Amino acid sequence: MALSFPKKAYKTFIHSFPILLLFFIAFTGFDLSFFLFNISFSFNFIYILIFFWILKKPERLGYGLVFCAGIINDVVQNFPIGISSINYMLLCTFALFIRARTLLPNLLYDWGFFIIAILIISSLHYTILTIVFDMPIRYGTLMFSSILTFLVYPLFSKIFNQIYLIDLRQENAK
Amino acid sequence: MAAESGRDDFIIAIRSAFLKKGTRQNFSLFTLLIISILVLSLEYFKSGPINKFRSITKDLIFKGSFLVSAPFVYVKDQYYLLQDHLNMYEEFQILRVKNFEVEKIKNEIDFYKSENIRLKKLIDERNIYSEDYLLAKVLLDQQSPFLKSMIINKGYKHGIKLGVAVKDQSYFVGKIINVNLLTSRILLASDLNSKIPVVIEPGGVNAILSGNGNNSFADLEFLPKMNEIKEGSIVYTSGVDGIISPAIPVGKVKIDDGIRYVDFFVNYSQLKFIRVNN
Image 1 (cartoon, rainbow over the protein chains, first blue to last red):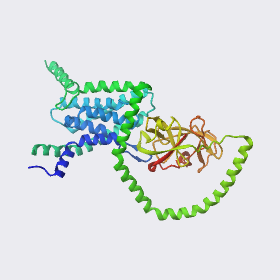
Image 2: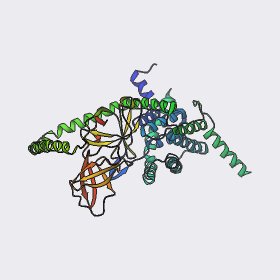
Image 3: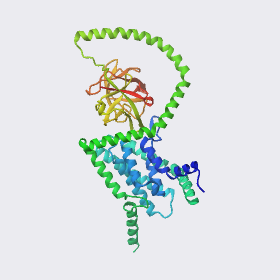
Image 4: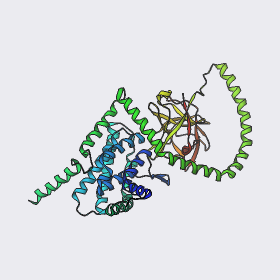
């Protein structure tokens, strides 16, 4: 039986959700930052998105598209073009490495590896920007943002997991 | 034996993480990583065809970004419009009182202006207030703690130059830091990396206005130890860098626990059109 248009659109949306979200964030530079007691709280949403989906289902994102999202992010954020792509590719590498080494997926285990991955990537990001491109960037702010990204990972992981399960159910039904 | 199988596992994990192409992947991570490094190294070419290609790519991405964020910008505009409507009556009451004062000040200013022109003619002084500007539309409003910038729809094709001041009406917004063919990027005065030489009046105290990532206020650096800056003093650009025009109003001094801040005159969240000094 053929699916009605809204159902088909919903199914496509759920299936392409990670890609749509990745490009939406890359194009708009959207971040969930806020000011509290004159301190800026921000986290890197793209890192969470890439790490989670590469761990769960790498073919949903596609490395080529992650690379393109990195280029777009660099242009929008005024970074040297290519630096975000390197960060994202390295994050994919970390995630795929854990995926290949893990038999039973475990949130705590992923969470632990996530902090290691983002700390290495943030340090590399800082090193390239300051040493190679001589760009002024505050190490403290970058690390604070990385720690916040690490802290909110379980929350978004749970949300993404629900989306992943909906998609899986639709695939199984087919 | 166990150590050998452990090493094999590690190599397999590395291979699958780095070199293997997935079911629907056209490139391996390794290839893309190499391409990323090559693209990054192209940043060293600041002129020639690579720079032109980069400029066109940036223009295309900015236009795409403008289209993608258009619905969200519309929603944000509607929200501010609604907020303006709700606050209309209170604002009207305040503005009515202010209007009487403004009328009085306007008459005084007219007098001082004509006197100023007459005196400048006497000493043969050049007019520092440039009225020559280019009107540009804000395409993209980039507001993150690491970057406070805006993309405008005018580039070097329209005569935009690097480093020049950008104003909203007569108030300072920021300066041009990147010029493409059809678009340019403005670094807002609120950005973490923004350092603007300013002068505080009355008193003529020189300082550096340093952005802190907050859209409402910025810090004052390199102030003299003994200064008599009072709350409400006006901060203007000093123009000592030789690029930004002098005497553009930036904000008012606010003192909190002995620390001096500058409250911006410009509302950065509602900028639609800006003026670029020519």
